[in-house]
Image (cartoon, helix red, strand yellow):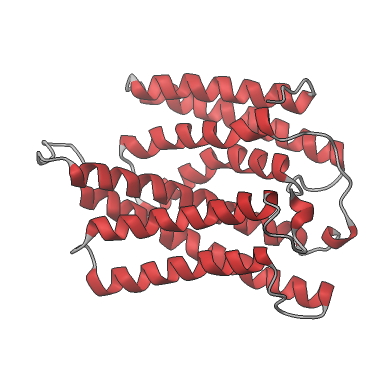
Length: 272
């Protein structure tokens, strides 16, 4: 565990504290106060993200510390935008945003080093920001979808039917589907931009690099999910939810295991 005493680190801990307060307020069903805490957390997080940008002199999405900082900082505003776009406005989604934010900020605050690094030549491209940014946005949305899918499985396994006002498995499954509909185009754009970048940097559209292969596996997993749900709709909500959760497992492998494991040596290992 690495405690951070830099200005960015202090702001990360401050954001985590505010998010924890917002989480407690949400559990106590004090919605307006929790919204205020979420807005305050966003301001603190954006300050940390902007300060990191100034410190390293490039958009902070190079290494694992910066990736998790970006994911944690932008989950709350992206979650709010997603709720307005999809119409999902049940308490579990807002509560889930606070929980996911804490989970994503933990590696930035306590696991990965925040030592400033210069941008390597391989990343000095105009496509660096857009390519990574659309992936980060898609990962945030698909993580939210997996949380809703997990709640769907929970309610499916309960013997009693939901009481009045309580959400059912189908409600959470629909929420997961709508979030995947938002995240999948961004995932596709990230894959496309990576291919264009590979052509410009390495002379080929596809290099069969481990990171490329697992990114493709993620995309194919969600493509399978869309085909599956088109065929069965909500007739098999538990299977639909399992597909969404498997998609997140593939993302975790792509984001963490491929970068950190010695089993997957490739051209993208500078991101560890």
